[in-house]
Image (tube, rainbow, N blue to C red; front, top):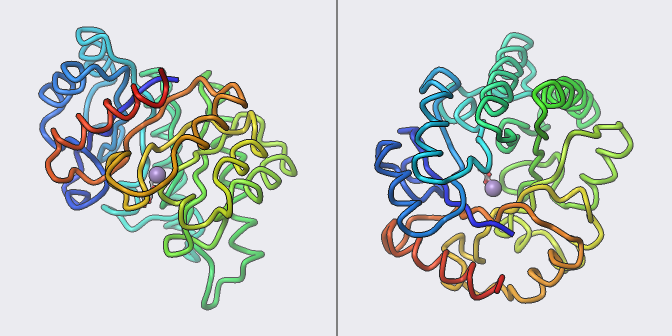
Length: 270
Ligand code: LER
Ligand code: MN
């Protein structure tokens, strides 16, 4: 397994679960100094920075790009793939597809988190899921063209009502033949929703394609009370060799959160 840390460049996400918010050259340096294998990028969009510049910063620091987030489409532009407004839906899909392309150029999968939206009010679950499925077919195909995976993230109940568990999301991806789409096991969301996080990981098996490495309180692993040993055993059991990426609050400071993360990563994976 490999370590990764989140770098955000989105003003609206200042209070969000991302560790370093400094300009990218400085944030890449910090990640490398602390010994991370990779960085996960949360950017305003695909035109924020030339992918070649990202690749050269990564190679200068011997870092990989673990994944790229798409949540700026929601936090900056209020877009969701399941919005009742067809114009917003199509702009949302364009945004996510453009991030899949951007990810392809830096060798990283894009993540669908908050932009999956939710159903309710006048929007039925059936209609919302039909739109989500249509969008996921498009992102799955675009990821394949870019020779990367696409990552779908089950979120906790306060953020979405589409899929809150790895098991239901796995069954859904199988049912729709979304073969280039993997699941994100975010340990913070799983702590809220799963009865047994280790068992959920074992049951999802090879569908687990990315991990957000967070403790119960969404702080660095070791600063909360999630029992991590059984989760790491489950990841080993399924042969997971991807990233444990710290999508966490920068508390008590970005540096302390990053240091605690790499310390926990080493203790749990050695
Ligand atoms: C994104 O990875 C995530 O976990 C969400 O909670 C953000 O809304
Ligand atoms: Mn997450």
